[in-house]
Image 1: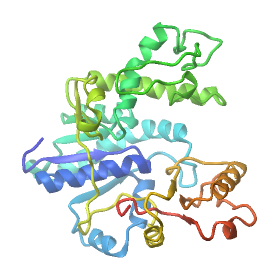
Image 2: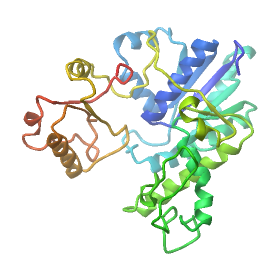
Image 3: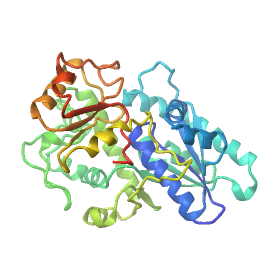
Image 4: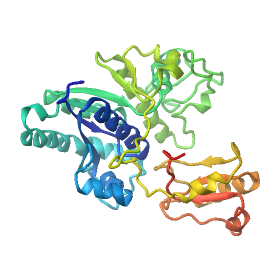
Length: 359
């Protein structure tokens, strides 16, 4: 990478927390290195991304003023399917997207001169190996991209030692316990730089649904091969902040911080329109006093859980900003408890789309 004519195809996992950092990275390599980028989302995410654009950015997109070309391929699910079921979504992505990505690469290369053909693919590791495999089969160099911090990678590297020490159950070690379940109540001492963990607080631990836990555990196991490849593993982290953990992963290349661009035509990567009224409200609060509450683009609560959270926020009595998606409670609009809106009118602000780059 690095030549003026490099054409990079970037493909994130179809979720908010993956699209945003990869899109920031796309603009960075355009601005800093003059590269051409094709940014590939699923059709569903592509439509939400365009719908969330403010008017000036939508006009720039329509007039092709943007530096990053947005493209899309189907994820295999019907429009009405629930894409917050990440395991169903992942299974469909892995089944349907590879052939469409291959066709897209071939189509882009057939329409471009030789010096503008796709030369590099950067793929979100949450997609699995298939995107890297598609690139390699077409003779294109590929690099995995980790959109989250290196702590998860370091923890994944430590899993086998925990299994051998009979602290964790492996995939087939004990039929009476689910994969990833703890076999000991002791605290886990993982590599330096990571705080000691309780066995019931591991990131894949879902004791209420052991099938989901096994799938989450398998995802962490799938991270291990990325740390043992010959090429770079790009990671959304800052070396100066995570140096002790980065030293554990020989092929890691920290590329953070990925800061948002304020240039016209640079998408924020948000999948919902931004509500700027929260900025004016935030400016009126004492410094360091506001609690920020957000659960990402996939998490769903039951109506009872949502009500308990709302009551808890009211009882705390401190100023709070709460991002409440329209599909946050069981896939539909959540209903606030009786009297809640009036009770928090002076110190609470609920909104649908947070302008993070302005925060």
